[in-house]
Image 1 (cartoon, rainbow, N blue to C red):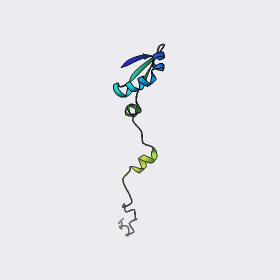
Image 2: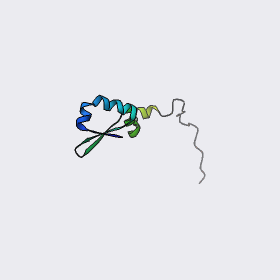
Image 3: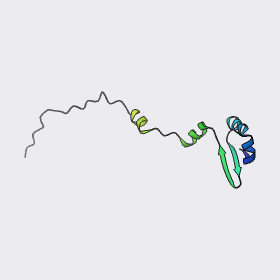
Image 4: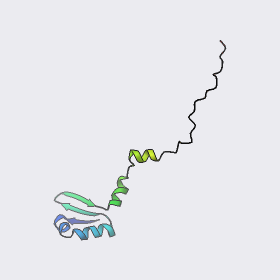
Length: 80
């Protein structure tokens, strides 16, 4: 991973982004802070996109064929 000083990364930002695409993550240092620039796809891979509640519900099996009719037959007799 290449480390850029902030002033250099600022003046060559387009190059930083080109290198992110071709070489991978790029590190930028500002004083004692370090930052990493990655692509959106890399970010999604790291964090994992979580489905929305609606997406989750829509992914459940289709229950339209499920028979939910109540059994109307008489209950069995119990002898005391």
